[in-house]
Image 1 (cartoon, helix red, strand yellow):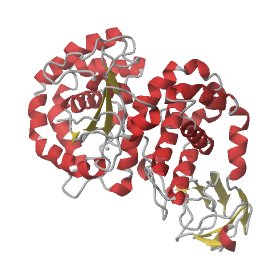
Image 2 (spheres, rainbow, N blue to C red):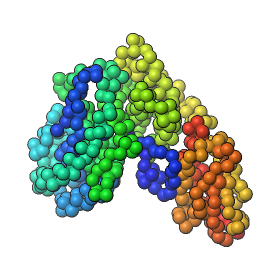
Image 3 (cartoon, helix red, strand yellow):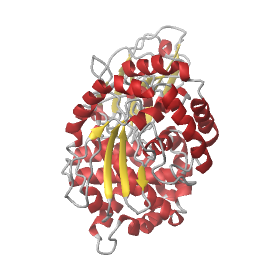
Image 4 (cartoon, rainbow, N blue to C red):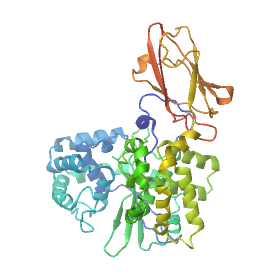
Length: 478
């Protein structure tokens, strides 16, 4: 699940007073009888992520563990020209191999140095972006890279750090109810769960699965790391939503194949995607099917926490944040999953209910944008001058933003405008007036100067949780 991050989502400028949202292997049997799932660092995951890091994929160059990233650069920089790296670059450029498809390859291979396919490669295995020939041609190059780069030595040299990560993550992982998955999705025999910690994955998290020829499935949650201590070692504080990320990624293993099987029931998804495609693509969700996968996974996470007794305000916050991410219909979709749970005699498994979700998407497009926009807050005016004014008195010390719905006064989020920090006028912490209908912005102005800033929905919310629509303020002093 894409983690909400100030540095990634709002790179220019943002203040927060509100909290932000957004986990050797174990096994889990059906129902509530499961053995412990143990987090571990996997050599295959590190190998594939580092090869695609060297190939230039941005999702594997986040550097959220700076000391580890520096070690990678020192050790592997001489091997950037290796054939495996060159082919990885070509596969990324031509076929879009990256993100989850890289992790799908990792979990489809036997441990190094053999790196043999655990299941036969097909046009869809390990992932459709690889293709059968691409995957088969890449493997011998990967084995050569592993040997020539002395990858085993690098991995062994970092085992102390890996053990720290595994130990610290175990507490968070122990909170997961793995029995919820077969209960929610329907009985699925032969499930095996794996939790892998991706040290080079930044805040990228993935939920691939491996289906064996006998029908048994291995479900993987590959969790990145975006926090560290002063020594550079990974940390996994609960407030950073690592638990929700684990729940999210394992959901993908059930949702994605079910949606793929029933995609013919989703003709209404394309018109919905057309409305929200700009937002979706910022999260690397490039088509309607991915949008449907993600929306169902995120709705299932919300249902999971509801059933675990999460207080209603926190659960509502999850829904509103997903709406801000572009899933404008999240509240209705959560309600649809509740209908599914209430009618399990009629719909014994999640795939059996998907045609009903398809009908939901068919009726969604005509009302998606307008219904959500009507619930959001909007700026209606500025005081003491109108937006885009060209003769503002430089002695003004307070700008008042008037909105049409009362805002929750616990947070604010404001970005620099297009001209950057030199043209940002706000000089102190914003406050609220008129019971939340006004945002009061202290400013320091100079004559004959242009100014701009953007109010964003990240922390400006109505009192019932709907965001403030993005609003850009621009003006010039006389």
